[in-house]
Image (cartoon, rainbow over all chains, first blue to last red; front, top):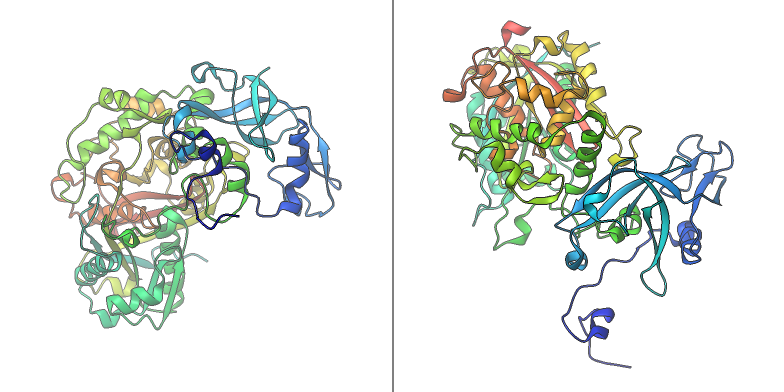
Length: 154
Length: 395
């Protein structure tokens, strides 16, 4: 037990060198709602919320279907395949944790199931990313607790 | 049922746009603009019985008290980001037409005094997302979006280039033409001429957005006053009539829009035109929100100023300077004046339309100035408001 408060984030302290700010990890408003998504990601599986009444896919996760207002929603596996709907190459990130990685690709991927998700395109130089390019999900274990879903060229 | 021509804008106030106003407060600058608008209209502060300010940053009770007005007929804080003045005009026109109150003031201010962090009204939340956990902090921030509002506008830009073949050298003309317009505007923060190459050679904030296609946040105060058409005709300035006004709400996350290339202006503009009885071919000039070139471009398309997807060729073939065939953003727009953030950034499009319609825009006065279309945008992009404003000749 320590009595000395520290302002150093744990990951930077472990580096012992420059105090690079950590990247933000997901901060859910309602953990019970989205836990199935993050638990699946940790198993390197992609699941999406689906309405059992109208069969529509939903993202981001909600308590009620925005199409038919049903509250009977389930989590179901998706293909993990899709296409780049649009993208931007970030030179000036909002969060200082990303400073060392610029330029990188922030994208919206439209899954074959029709839903769109914010993500990064990896294993592809930013200048080679194209709208409508086929992509497939990859899983980035960014911490013990969290796995982010990114996409690479299919 | 329509309030077409039943109300008018009768007073405007606008301070210089500056990167910061040291030793001034947001309320102080707002009060200065409010006083200017009241004087401009030839009213006394006791006449103002209605107030619309900003719910996000500038609550009506504090504004009324500080400025020294008693809005006992109506008061509300409206929060539609940059589209707030458009929502305010729509609400005010309906209320005035119903006789709820007589004179409504809209006012906002921002100081951005570096020595006083509290003077940055309406500053966005934590970098890369909100301070409170929400959808953004869970599913967006971990993937590293760009600073400020740049991400979603860049997503629109990339898709627009893909879908319609729009080129950055075409959209760069927006920044260039508006900078020409800012030349004779003493209120603008940026007035030095620039070229298409200057824009294309400026650094990327995030591809495809060059920094000279993005607004610079600025500070100042801005205000306008509305009243009924009958009262307006007794005041000192030529009335600027509200011929049509409409507000449309789009998605909060614009990339969830079925077609990201369509803004809510596709709904607000036709509604405003139906009320006014005028359409795109009738307008003599336009004042369109311009936080980014791509937002300006897309809303001009959605308002029918050119066909959908044709904004690139439109800017190649149209002189949009105040001397040109179809002047747009005749004061230099936000891209040259600097953006009054905190919910009032669309207000300069209203005040400039008023100056031009009155024929009081000085060196940058446009030749034909009886009928103008104004569009203001909030979010990135989310909500839009479109207004048709005109002189007595357009009634």
